[in-house]
Image (cartoon, rainbow, N blue to C red; front, top):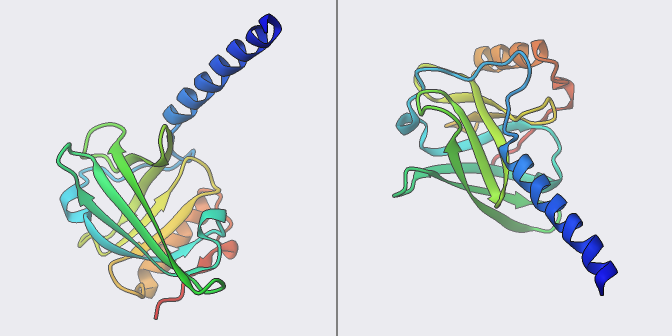
Amino acid sequence: MKNFQKIAIPVSLGIIGFLIFNSCSVGIVEGATAVTNFNSKKYLGKWYEIARFDYKFEKNLDNVTATYSLKPDGSIKVQNQGYNYVKKEWKESIGEARFVNDQSEARLKVSFFKPIWAGYNVIDIDDNYQNALVVGNSTKYIWILSRNKEIPNSIKERFLAKAQKLGYKTDDLIWVKHN
């Protein structure tokens, strides 16, 4: 029993420390800058996922949307939905987002499995808050979002050029189908 405690306590503390460290690593891709003068109220509402990389948690999903709403405590409710065309069923995931710094900077951290947080950084958005380019803390995470099921070609090209400049392999993007 003493040997077990000698191993279990340090391992447990290490795991807790790792989780706390990871929950704070909500950075932004090197070279990227989050949108400033960000209006979080204009960002709330429903967005269609236009493009993404092939993430395990979004595997085989079409008709993907993200809906953001303000919670009473000032954090943001994140409701993601998508249709798994292989299993022929809808999937939903509810999470929470919080600003990393001031609300005027579009750097957030999002969690679907507390205490694990991930970076959510809006690095480009059009003036009317209709199309957004969002990245995580590495070049493994990128989303192109729109208020509509399609994105104007000029905005698409602008977002792709910005992503490529940051090192994203945009040829690997999955272009989400919406019915």
